[in-house]
Length: 289
DNA sequence: CGCCAGGTGCTGA
DNA sequence: TCAGCACATGGC
Image (cartoon, rainbow, N blue to C red; front, side):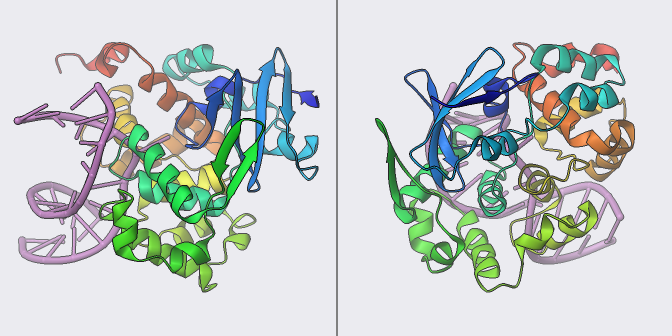
């Protein structure tokens, strides 16, 4: 079975930190999709073992998807600037920001707004069952993520029946934008962060937070610093700036962490989400204030 | 049951 | 520019 070098890597932290919604644990493997092709992976020490029936999924392709070409210790050293991020890094070292498909990331995070991860996973799975193509790998049966053209032609009623709620028209409108060529996602990969984010904000259902998630997880914009309710809560204790707006926290964090702020965000997000106690106990500086 | 969730769009100051 | 509000749904 093929494998590749995976130093400074935690598959578990990377797949369970809320950046991707489609990987399934089964028989000691993680099943998912890369380039619409099913693949299974497992970490063994500092090797990543994988299997796919499609030869197009080369070791180089997986290396890129899991960001194993980046020097993680070097990245972490640039964001390790205070005791809170230091604790998050110490706990989840090896977490990497995956390089996911741009369209799938955009569609997924439109569904993710004002929602919880369990339900997001269910919504996306039903979306794939309804509009994707059936694929299999060993005992795994799944569905590819639907192309924008297919979602663009879906009825709002049917999308709502999948549980998308008020996001249904947003998703369809965005799919149409992509299908019509009005938003060329291919260009965004090479664009600057500001340019990419501005373009993404032109989609319905995409505000600051979703645009930052898509820029970071789908278009390699590592300066992006998405602020959801968890990050906002943490940041208010963290930076003692409770009165700042979300935009204020966002700009402050980007300046604080620098060009790899997106990595800092992902470590902090996963850290506060996996604590057993409240965020205010982790960041006690303002207790009683 | 009530509260919460990887927020956004709209409105009115 | 910013605060306040409605919004669908289901997990817990």
